[in-house]
Length: 246
Image (cartoon, rainbow, N blue to C red):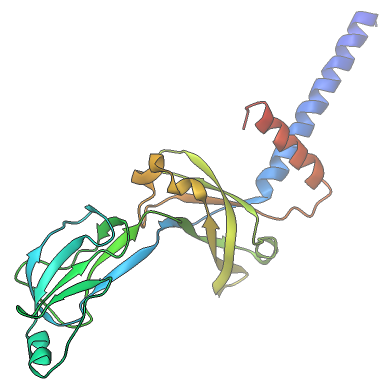
């Protein structure tokens, strides 16, 4: 065998070993991640509840409309309020509503910046005291609630602080961190695991349309890697990220 042929053989063997090693590390990386059964975006919400039962006389907002703190949402005329005032009650304004004693009406206001969701009121409708009129979904601190079906060996490797990925409907991938873990049910040898994932990028205006309350997403959580390939796999994935292949 000539030197050239030997060199080709050695190079070929090295290439095969490198490809094989890379595939092993990629497989190990895949085994150390789990994908959610379901996942959705959760945003801070402020419910608007009726302090007094009454009839809606004015509706100033619509479903999905953006509102600011203190902005009027709707007005209700309340017979209950009229009776309380007649008996000497002196209801006062607060951050959530303003009272007009002369007309026995209550104007409800937004308590945070955001958008209107689950608007249950229409002009002319009667709503009892305590009824939910609407919800204002806030702008900040969005997170993801995901449900995973895991076997015991996977569940014990899910940790608070573990890295996670959020895949939006347009396949954009955002980085996140596991904030909370809980198990609600167990079927056979698998557990239904609820995981809350913090993701600051969901608050960026760029993703506002895809990060609304209840928007469906996919969550991928990294499990603790206890194997001897943990170090090499981590280094290999960082290398792929550095050269732009991941």
